[in-house]
Image (cartoon, rainbow, N blue to C red; front, top):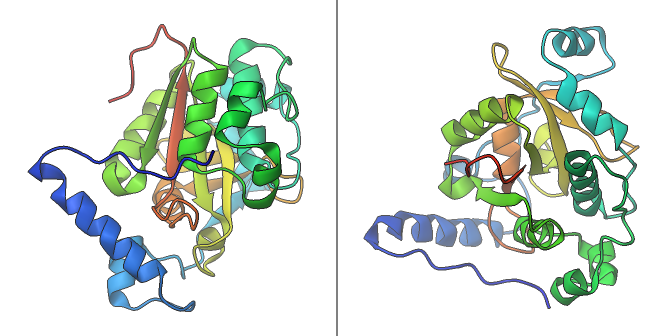
Length: 254
């Protein structure tokens, strides 16, 4: 069964969250095309092409060589290309295998009986996964890990940057859920999952390990990545975000 409901926050301090969600649903129900100023303020500018530096470029290699690349190398050891519409599945497989130092999980046995109760592979092949679904599945497949999801609309850019800083010095891994169109500056559709493989704090650049063979692993400004994650998922009807997967020895990221 698909997970569609959103847990209702408690207290008056969350009224702004519900107002924002209502605004997002109103804006995304409009006809397609460039948004008005109100939409840009609420959703971020998805109609501006972002700076994307390919890893295999001279600049991309320079950035990689100027940081600790151990996390990137560990992820590459267990990298495999995604099957059609399986970007979330593939990201989960790579992260799980990297943390467990094992190749036991693949994009087929990912769908255990417990996972199939949440969403069957046939549905994922048509519409992919939402952030909440992937977080729930990873928690089921990895009960020994701490698996946290963070939506952009109630987390913020500062928290995302803080998590990037902590991630580069921890044994945990991050999965991002963002809009490819937002990075291209053509809108906010075409959702995608990929993995954070490094962070250059001085340049404020995030290294996104691409799970699709059709796209390039690239460096992206942290602010632009956050904007791309702020794009609304047409299935969940709320903005996207990121997932932290951490060994139990580390406390939850706050």
